[in-house]
Image 1: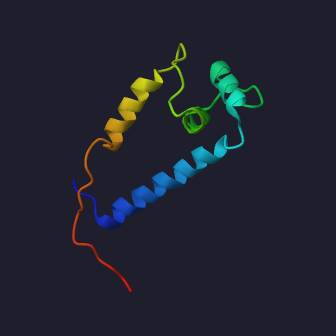
Image 2: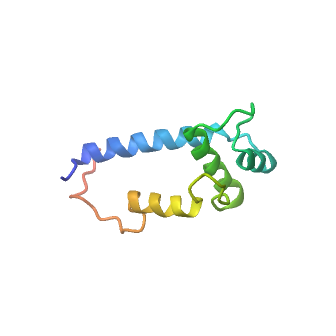
Length: 105
């Protein structure tokens, strides 16, 4: 089923809003704090990371270190997760225009 252009833009907007929240969550955390939280799988208050916080921490790790964090026992490998995300988002496929471009004045 093909989505309309409006639906595709709405989905992208939703994605980017969520991504901005992920990026913001640990934006003040430095390299030492990110490493400590990842190794302990806890947030700044020592509470277990929620799924959202875990994803946000991975995002911050990528910003600081340029790669996904190392595998932790009991959690899926970040490398496997990245491959899954790339496949689900079709990041390895070329972008193909869906219709004629419209320019508004």
